[in-house]
Every structure is written in C-alpha cells, then in structure tokens.
Image (cartoon, rainbow, N blue to C red; front, side):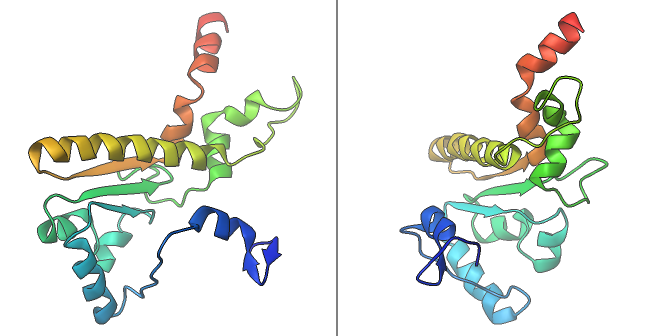
Length: 172
C-alpha cells in the first residue's frame, strides 16, 4: 500500500520482491505452523526480524526449528540483538541512527542532529545479515551444521562509523 502505486500495487514493494514467491501464514494457527515446519525441513536459510522472545512464543525459534532441520541457518535481525539491556525494545532505523551517533555527523556543524537521507541502519543490517549467512553457508557445506546468527540494527550501523569514531577518539 506504500506509494507510488502502479495498477493498485506499491511500486517499491514490487521492486524488492520481483521474482519471489510469497506465502502468508498466521503462525498462531496450528495448520499454518505445520506448513512452516514442513518448509523448514528442506530450507537452507530462515530469516526473522521479531523482537527477541516472540519467536519462542510462536514456536519458530532457533532451538525448535533446528530440531526439524539441524543444517538450518537461522538469522535473527532485531533492533538491539538477542541479549543485552535493550534487547526487549523494538528497533527502528531512526532510533539506531540516533543511538549510534551517526545523526550527529550529518547536517550543519554546530546544529541539531539530522537523520541520514536513507535508512542506513536497515541497509547495514541487511548487508551484515547477508555476509554472515554466506559465511554460515560455507561452514554448513564443510560441516553439515547450521547455526544461529544474531544481527542488530544498532551494531550493524556502528560499524559504518569506524573512521569517525577513530577521528573523535584520536583527535577529539
């Protein structure tokens, strides 16, 4: 439903989902959960972006799914990771931008922090998830074992501030 709409469909949605097959399941229903479990039996990768704890309630957490498929690569993407003091909080790109300090690097010198023009932490988390999944896939090819990957918006974006952090801590 996000504009611009072309023939009643979101053009942005169509761009990022082109050539994909989609399935919508209400995981609170046993029948839907069983469909997901059947798909997991032969899946290589499972990606979720719920707040930590939600997948356990839905019975789609790593421990549950790896019993179905021990070779499964399971990637969790959340605002602040699966552990730590903020893990229970919802995470959005704008919040991660503020917490990481990246907003203080944009805009006018001496002015208020300004949001980066693109959802940089969302993009960083997606890229971080991708290369960790690829590494886990190589490991799986060698060992036959899957693993759980934990990616956070905040930590993924912090990596992109390494030069600025070095300049700050090195020269004030």
